[in-house]
Image (tube, rainbow over all chains, first blue to last red; front, side):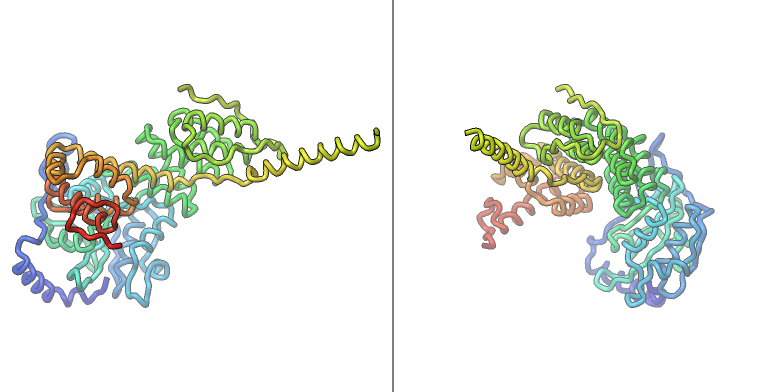
Length: 330
Length: 133
């Protein structure tokens, strides 16, 4: 994060050589992934040409890297504007969590990338720049740094980065991998919530989507769950998320539909039964809520954790048409 | 006669009503919606567990564990009682270990789990590990 790392460079290179001599085989041997044919094939080299670059001011690699990531998604931002949001003057740097939450505030889904060269190549090939953290110095004397990977060249064995004051800087692959490894291979892709990263897996995507939901980015969360539902139609969590978002947006009708459908497609999913019961009770559909509760008990068995059976009190007039509940057949 | 009987009925009726309300009182507690993140976290936990258990299915791993006197049931039981954080940590360590998915890595992992749990008195498999308490 600090600019002085440029001055320290010869020193840590020396230290690294010394360490390498002492430790011998301990250093990880980073290789390019095996070449593949057909659908799994990756281009030999690729650089995303149209990613805007912001040179960092002293110490401020965080705001610079973040504005690059935001601009890549057509969200206007400059490092100066972001300094107040993500830069901690007394620490002389930016925390990872601030980078992530600042992007989330702007409606982007922050996807944690698997820390491998192969994943990096796949995302670049798909046109997604990757925010990475590096430790430019040593484990016990860290020099943290944020940069944006915008390309790679397998032939020349280089990773192309927007970093510090250098636009599209070509860094030899091995030192890059070592510095990335010392930062635990921290990497994030920031995408609009209806665009899956190339390496997206259901659980990390859903977890990132639920982070959007939990921080009140309901519309972004809704889009992210919808994307997940299209991509992984057998997963229950996307529809569950859609139900919860609809509920949070005060749209009981769609919420009801989602939870009801879940209890049919995934009858063993206790949280779906729970939320359907709660929702129906709140809507004044006491009879339907009790019926749902009975169905849940029947389907899940006596051991399942369920809320109390809703009381039969029709004090509030039903705000939506109360559905007729049929238990799933066993 | 009439004057004494009627109030008793009414009182009984009121009492029945009161008892009904008492019985209903605990049901008034509002249940909460389950959040999406807790559902996803639960799924992730299952996924991590399954992943570990699938490694256990490898024959070489089973044979080696058997030779060490550890049954598969013991290991599975142990996996089930790991906290989400422990599971995630272990899975990550396994993924990052240079041996990767190799048998050595998996066995090293299970031995590690058992030494830790032996120390915490949860298991007693290695006689050389002294329990903390």
